[in-house]
Image 1 (cartoon, helix red, strand yellow):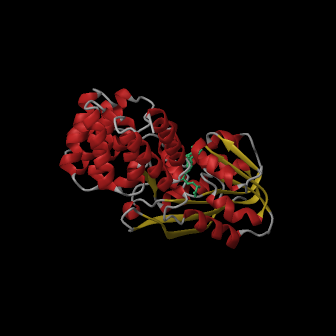
Image 2: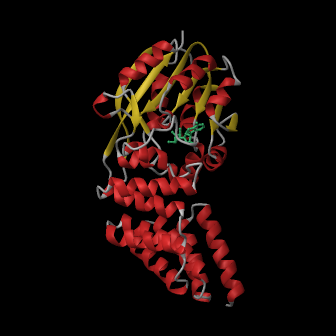
Image 3: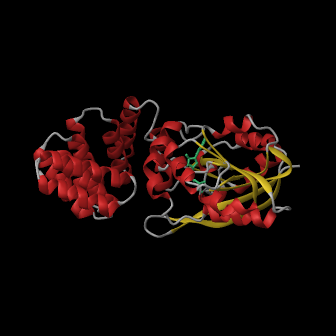
Length: 367
Ligand SMILES: C[S@@+](CC[C@H](N)C(=O)[O-])C[C@H]1O[C@@H](n2cnc3c(N)ncnc32)[C@H](O)[C@@H]1O
């Protein structure tokens, strides 16, 4: 086999990775490396696949091989840092991220990663400096640096997760979303079943993602629409084949174009990406017919004191999430004309270490 075969095998491996066939992807890229081991990108991409498979030490070894072939390979240094971080080797992670930054001065992703490391070790000042550099290089804030500056108490929180951050976050998570230990969609679907007065409804799934919720509520729907900003998530929803209409876009704008269009508006883990809920409650009120249901999940604020805030949990904050208090939900619901039918503490999901993450399940009724 020659270099051309190696390039073909590598391309097939990359395609298998994009389709989520990780074992096949690893096998194909390993064959490519066996055919020609001099290509830094092959080792780099094998590192990505091995990391996705949870084989962190093997992934580190692949990135190190890529770096041995191309010492100024900034992306490889950066990804190696992420693997060391996942292995709990913070000093090595910091060194790799710093090396990545030396290869590509001002790089937003490496500043972001160093900011997270500094915040985790209690160096808030240096963390804030890295997050600010990240924003300088990435003004659309695809990394979510503004939310983290707000969490550090050194900047105002954005009104909602910036679209660029949502696109990046869910572009990466779409492939694995359906395998996460997450109960939000089931909680919303069960609440709809419990509170709906009729069997057949026109339903809108806001922030429908990969269609987990749509797949459960389809039997209750005369018409089922979904809207989401993320093309990667929508691609998975399309593949499920359960929606009558799927739309890509900002959900407030979508709702404003469909007054009194639905009997139920559902949002599983969608409004976690909004700070002030007033505009979205008003949009939902306008989008519902008489006695329509608005059912969604949120994360609760710590001790329920603040109306809403950037999530205190560092993992959730890095995912661009906000938290809300039940009292705040009740006030905004009343001001938007909704009656509260239920507001329950629930287990929303498990974090990567298997710990339960609390949520709030909200069932509101239009007049
Ligand atoms: C945590 S995921 C939940 C997906 C789905 N509801 C489920 O339960 O599996 C949140 C989804 O909301 C979408 N989203 C968040 N804010 C949005 C906005 N302002 N407009 C449209 N989609 C949004 C994201 O793109 C993402 O797919």
